[in-house]
Amino acid sequence: MAKIRLVFGIVSILLSISASQAQTSQPDGGGIRKGNLPLTWNTGGPKCMEMPEWQVHEYNPDLFILRQSGCTDFEKPFLYLLFGKNRALLLDTGSRNGNLVPALQHTIHQWLLRNNRATISLVVAHSHSHSDHTAGDAELKALKDPAISIDFVPATVEATKKFYGITNWPADHGSVDLGDRMIDVIAIPGHDVVSVALYDRQTAILFTGDSLYPGRIYIRDFPAFVASNSRLVDFTEGKLVAHILGCHIEESRTPYVDYPVGTIYQPDEHELALSRGALLEMQATLQNLNGTPKRIALRDFSLWPTGPAFRSSDESQKFKETQDYQRKHMWDQTQP
Image 1 (cartoon, rainbow, N blue to C red):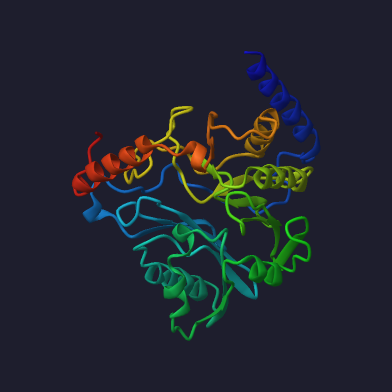
Image 2 (cartoon, one colour):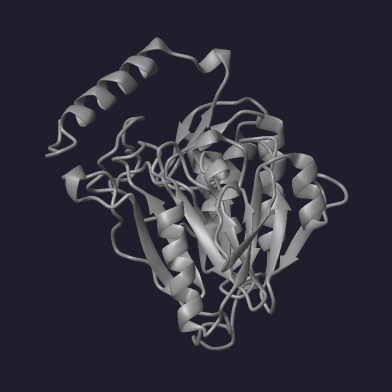
């Protein structure tokens, strides 16, 4: 109980400090460009015959969120498409069986039509290198569309450093200007060696990839992850953060309860957005672990270190059971 009280005490202090530093003079949005998030997202049912491969949501006229259907792959990742005056940026290319190009082309062509444009340059970059975020790379590289010219950034440390102008990885920050739209880039290895977070100054959204989202935060390099979270806390200090948007939802709306790994249909899933308070909660929890990796379920996400010490045959069996059940019922999904 003493440790629990310590954690919540630290979180309360950090939240108080944050509130005093990221304020606006009036409740008028602080000059950031507004947008909206849906109350619910498509997941993987209840009837996969009726589900589109991608759900496209317009946050605002220059920011689109694409979510892959769980009917195509249980990972159900989110992709982000941001438009500036000179070029657009696509963050990630989706998971297996995504068939991204038709939905992406349609969205870009509609944006061009609305903005009386004939062409645009598209930067294709990644939040990190794992296959559920890079599976569509080959499809994008093969795209032949006279309206879309692609600048592809491989999901490697060297390519990422070069494109964003990061001299000293991971300590330095980088950036990319899309044309009157500056995106800051923070190196955050730990989940993956090439993990990055993007901060869009226009909307004050922090895109955190798989390093923070409502679900299991898989930590492969614990010391690196701790240092990366501290860099994110430091970077965001004094900045407005409208939302923290990661690449998955695995948590349910019930606090401390997630969906089993492999779930394709999540009818009562957590909202996508988190706040900067989640970063501070994560920092306090990591500090309290004193360098010893441990799996901990928090209200809206879980710390999930990986490696031999954490491997369990029960997890593999649960994944198989979840996949078998939901694939069997994907045409008329019911709760197990």
